[in-house]
Image (cartoon, one colour):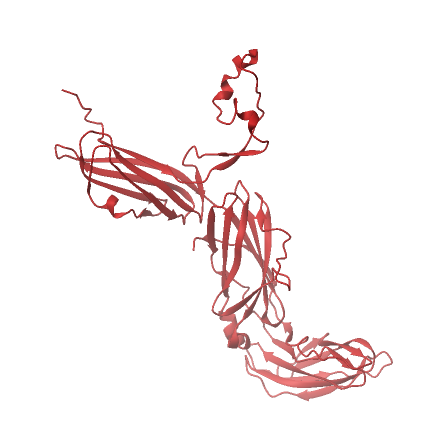
Length: 438
């Protein structure tokens, strides 16, 4: 009668991670004829796998190396593993079930398997249950794949076989952002993406998904649609690449200062990349926040100003002033007249506006007559709050190019030029953002 080890299992559990091979460099290889004396000392090369008798037929450079362990994986990539349960006995094994869990520092996730592996089955002699599990890793740190097989012995006893496979999830890239406040409530976002892996990868997509309150215009392509980058976004290890976006508030948000102060979330960066062998990864940043909109006093916008005008012609442009302070303003508008020989234009203005409550706006026209050819600067414009005895001087209101012949009007060139008087300490911030899986 054959003795059976009570601790021996009736089934064998095999687990293999599915991943693409890696590129490795060839070291110095010494080849020789079998009859040469140096062949006696070349036995260590034969066990290398990429050296030995066939090494001289390989081209210089890198070769593909199959995975030797569970290795590491990067956040945003898909973890895939092949699980196989094999009956090693000459007898059927009953009530066989397979379960796989992925455990991280904070969570334990059950990985779905097909129905044949979930429900109890009878495994015939030499029979096999196998499946491929996939999961997009969403957390950095140590992960453990726990595989468990439950079955019944011919005597009816329940048995369990468990195996553990540990691997690390690493950070693939580093994202830093800078915000620049520009005119007319425009915000410019510069996103710097750095490759912190040990191998090159290609940035397949870098897009800013704007929030419902802001619209986004990418500034990473030329007018003909070509990318500003001379080559595909291939990043070598530790190299970085910058992307630029223009962000504008939508609709009524841009007109209402109080509302604009409340909406600081501009969107999320969606990043997709591929490794040098085509493995895909995808990450999304946390919600990006613009600088808090702070404008303590007032702001002036120039509306519908022409770009070019003929000399001797009246140049009229409209302005909008907004009270962004917390108190009521009653403004006196004065455009100083210039009568000296060096003056570039003639014309003046001096009038009062109706009282403006906090957040209210008023529009008014200004007219001058350019008297010299070339670029003419209209300035200064003095706004005086007669209630608080505050005075604001705008040194450069608008520029217009004066010519001596007919021209094509381009009324949109100076449209919505904005001069702000605000007390924000800085218009630039740099942040390192948090990455998360979509």
